[in-house]
Length: 581
Image (cartoon, rainbow, N blue to C red; front, top):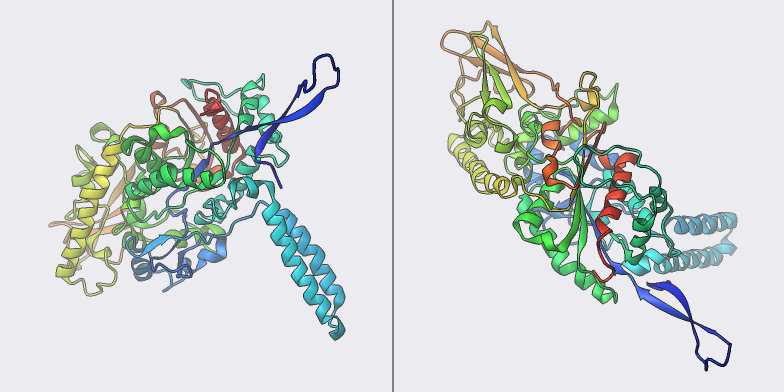
């Protein structure tokens, strides 16, 4: 059995001082538990049907490419299927995702040994009982290996710590690396922590209030007073991030203290690590729900701090991978899984507060910093929002550039029944007014006082790689066309639309005198492919440290630089924390 106390040996006289014989006593000092909670980005959590049954249907499973490929197929992943399946009111978090157990390597060794012995038995009928004995012994050895693993003994199984709630395809390897970087089964300082005595492989942004350097190793050694079990909190990313923040509040304030108390350990505060939209969840918990005092520090990765223009463009044209199954099959699958056009994206987003809370907030830009540009008939541009993105873009149903096109909200309403369309629009409007706008306002320019952040941009803005090109602004370019089609009248919204089947980057209109076709220009800003520099570059006045480097959005935590930044931030967060909390 692994002792959950840190062992320190001291020598004491246990006989009269005239006797020179010394006896060694073992003094055990308890380490304070400091859970590290990882909060994933949008679409990064596994979801299932909300039926109350453990074996309920998996809805969104991120174990690997094969587990999500169905969403890329016709019918199974079209707008109608998404409208039905990806409903925030009918889904909940699924904790059955793939998890690599702490004893996985030992389990593999056991399986390899016993399976070899079973194969050697061949198909000899006289050895059936021997095969059964080997199989039973193998199961017993596996159970013992998992039970006796030091990490499992101290912190419980990784499955119990929520790892199965987040997408293995995006975060599985990172979680394993993070835990192995913070825990050594022999009770020593993990080698990756010791490596931090070297100079960082990155440069912090100017204005950072700490160096993240540990040349004398004292701050690293200080971490030996603590245990850092890695937890993950998947959440229903279709729901409002406010609800997810309340789930985080329950986890930190109630669930974890009880969990570790039952294990005879003390847990009072945590460290939060977030990816993308997970940062919004964490900010609402610490700043709007009063959770700041329960958190030692927060580490944000590629957070859309003020929203992302991509949330607008994807509802207008779909995910912008722009590739085919022939040249880049994995990227093409990703594009089709996330939503290949406006119909698939709108069917989900229009009913889901979480994704809508990723739209650019007023802080992102209004007036001279407006981010949506429409080229007019005279060649002059008109930019939005001038004063209010909610009224001018998100709820402007009579404008063709409205983020949510009314006829795409409900693909089940194939006849475009006006009464049903009005009801669907009102539901969407209520989400914007009562869940999106208030949420955005509650966290605007508010961060935990001990916040570390990294974001992705190309260092040379003049030579941006295609994977880093990001919508910092959206520009619709106008072109005059010849057409004599009659504009439709059976839908809510801009009645000048000529082709209701336009679902990608073009929109055709008819004015009184001339027909026009508008095309959404490609992204040309700097960023990580999803979050633009304007939103990822959180002002330094809110941060303890900040770092940027070229990195793609989704796999941000798979990069060695971001992992090193995260480890250094954890050590820095703990430098002033005393062992008694």
